[in-house]
Amino acid sequence: MTIVEAAAALRRRQISSVELTLDCLARIEKWNPELNAFLTVTADTALEQARAADAELASGLDRGPLHGIPIAHKDLFCTRGIRTTGGSKTFADFVPEFDATVVARLRNAGAVMLGKTNLHEHAYGITSQNPHYGGVRNPWDPGRLPGGSSGGSAVAVATGMALGATGTDTGGSIRVPASWCGITGIKPTFGRVSKYGVLPLGYSLDHMGPMALTVRDTALLLEAMAGHDPKDPASVNRPVPRCLPPEGEISLRGVRIGLPRNFYFDRIDKEVDAAVYFMGYTAEDLGAELERVRVPDGEQLNALAHATLLVEAAAVHEPYLRKKRATYGDDVRTLLDMGRLIPAVDYVQAQRLRRRILGVYLDILKKVDALLLPATPMTAPRIGQTEVEINGMLEDTRLAATRLLRGFNLLGLPVLSLPAGFSSAGLPIGCQLVGRPWDEPLLLRIGAALEARTGFARRPPRFA
Amino acid sequence: MPSPFLPDWKSAAEAHRVELPEASLRRLEALSHTLLGLRGMLDWGEEPAEVFRVDLEEPEPRS
Image (tube, rainbow over all chains, first blue to last red):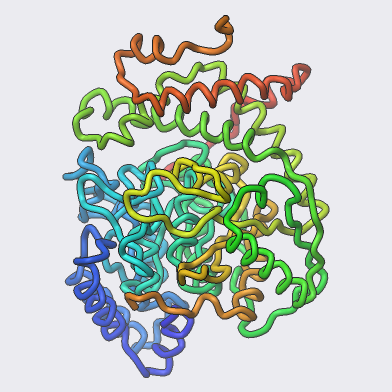
């Protein structure tokens, strides 16, 4: 069931928030032992919140479309009185005395919190194979990676353990798991959603965003999460526009969609290529104009993003790495050590080039309204697979998974990730729509149009 | 001959007293090559204050 459907059923009194919550808790009990999506389940609190939501609705108090909807939070978001580990041993016993702004906003919107989801340690990686709390498994094939770092959130949504979830994206951490688990997620414009109360990884790269089954559900969550927050210095004081696209078939007449000529389709799996082109032709069929565009070199953009992340993450973790070095898993500790070695001059020059490349992208986005790209060059690899073969070339799995994504964290542009079909092995394929700063409503409208026409969002995984 | 602009990553790691796997050293080497090549894209005439501008607006009080 989607959030939109559940919200309608709640208002028709066909279902209660308690029933929705019990259904999610039953799914968690059934599937979490195998899929390991949740680190903490707050069943008692959830039922208490659900009862309160039902009572409010019965008394005529309606907090909006998320009222009574059970959701989950990535265990990187601080939750008052509830352990927040960041998927780490470093913060294994951290119980915050406050809520992240996003958590507070979703609660004020009436959402019910089911618990905290598993993730890649410190959100620094894409496998979600956590050395301290066990690996998350893909609900389409439990022998495969769910993606990460927001892997638990993606699995929870894909399986109906939660109707929506929060995620974070520093180099693809919403979009990789959304793509590999067949769901939708958005990395909003940098500054659109508050970072306050979320354990940081890269100061200038971290983006908070929603994950859900459909584009319309994603839009509803984003509307509730977004908005200026004086507690976050990066938060931008702009009004939150209406994001929810209309229901049913949507015309894309007048919308110009750019397909990059270079880099983004150069080295990707043939089935991924075909699926993303199919989405492009579907958009054209709905009235959009397709245009081939040349974009700045993606390898160079990735190098700048990589250097920036290595340095910023090393700076964030410096005090903990000094005092609690033994609490870090091998892969994350190695990345943090690498970050300490990057020359300061390289970091400064990367920031200068970042600004220059953003200018080029903004010029491209004057000619087209959005760019359509693959999300990842391949479908979900097997757990433990350190290299993937793409068109005859072997690549490091982690680098391959993020090479079409991480540049947009550096640029801060909004990116919607949504299902684009399935491989011959039955695994989800994802695509991404990149837009102008603050233009999330248009991305969501294009995404909803494609989703309504293709129906890819509604195919359930094995565990659902 | 090693370039003065390309770090010797093994020595750098030793200086920081960290042990890095060969794959990580190779990644750093590849990264530094790309970053060095990108220097050609820098606009040396740009005003640095535009890049590292400190916003001196009165911050809103924290609630």
